[in-house]
Length: 231
Ligand code: PGA
Image (cartoon, rainbow, N blue to C red; front, side, top):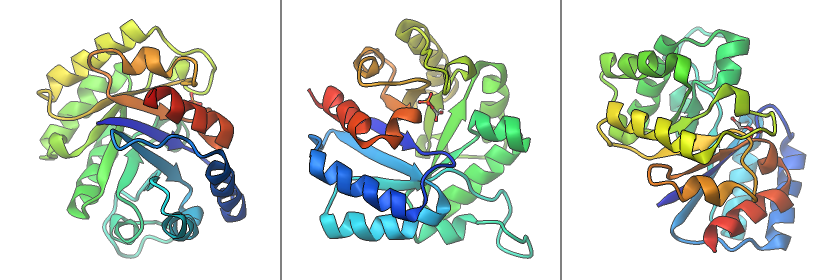
């Protein structure tokens, strides 16, 4: 199975997200049973987006971009994993945006992953070299079953910059991650992925798919990525 995961970050309200579906529907990308297409949306879009996907029987699965590291309780404003369980099958944790802007630590990431798994949601764990060892160690310390996660190598210099890294280097780090998790889970690459370069990453022996930020927002570009991989 190959994965294409879109990450809209803090973009698109519900109305805009429904227009995005209409556009994808009109473009008719060549969805393929060997490619899992997952779109990680803002919390506010998920329920309405799911309804429309179901109506159109479109083979896209939704995910969230974050979850509280706390269990349900007196935590004003927090969205916890039990709330998400009704809405999504996947959730990103540890994205470099959240580490940088919201001081998310490896310990918090591991707590989030644990709560997600307890609620049958697959954590999509983002990693980069400076904290890769520490973060994976933290997952093992919190007894996270890494075989139930998806990992994404996201070199910070490549995220949102239009400057992807060399696919061979990405594969090298994917193999390092694979070694640390005993080859138990899919490993993806993320950072300036486009329809022009997606194949060069996914053709590497240890890269099982991609996480796409910027080009997931534009239906034409996202559809081209799906089609490039399907060919
Ligand atoms: P990008 O974002 O595709 O715009 O580089 C990747 C990401 O969401 O991490």
